[in-house]
Picture 1: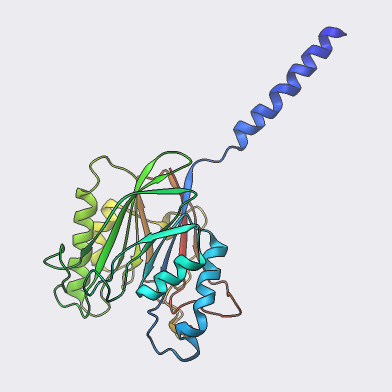
Picture 2 (picture 1 turned 90 degrees about the vertical axis):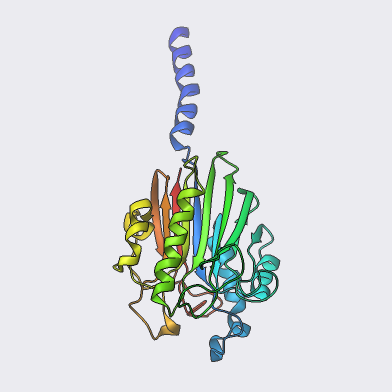
Length: 280
């Protein structure tokens, strides 16, 4: 009887440990790409002065480990820093690299992610100084970061950009520059994430070289959707121009176009945010 009791006791002690190991989640991150729509745009009742609380509420609800903004003016970036105290951000205004223009900002959750390095370059023939490239209507930039996941200790790169909305040469050459820099900046082959508003559909040939290096989260995720990303305040229901690309990750478990209303507002921006969960 005593021997049977000891065997049962040993079994009970082993079960919790086995269950705990089985339930342990693999390390990963949640990333969001969000064209916030510049704060000076006159969008009537959709203008920033009316919808700004919804942007903060969306990000607080979604709780990404990292997120990239497009079109963010300095005051919009500052607002999100103020209402999201767990996050810090980097990025410079595109017009002069100091105070003026939209920022391709990257935010990270200080509790889960550590910033190691970062920088910005311009999508032009002279990428290391503020400049407008090719046939672009505006100056365009890409912000890059080298980050570390605190839970796993693993490092990864994150690049955030916004391609021009007018010039096809600017889109083509700007993306080619990003692809070139992504290849050269990562000799240790860390996992890589690229997000942004690319202002073109996925069947465009400009994506061909990028597709050879990175995967499209929308197409690769185990759980995904095919919702439009540019909504134009409800006037556009087909355009998919916002993307999350990745390489060096073991898998993408979920991709989502975030269409949920916040603060009773149907649209948090004229673009729906998109999110992806990536596993190391």
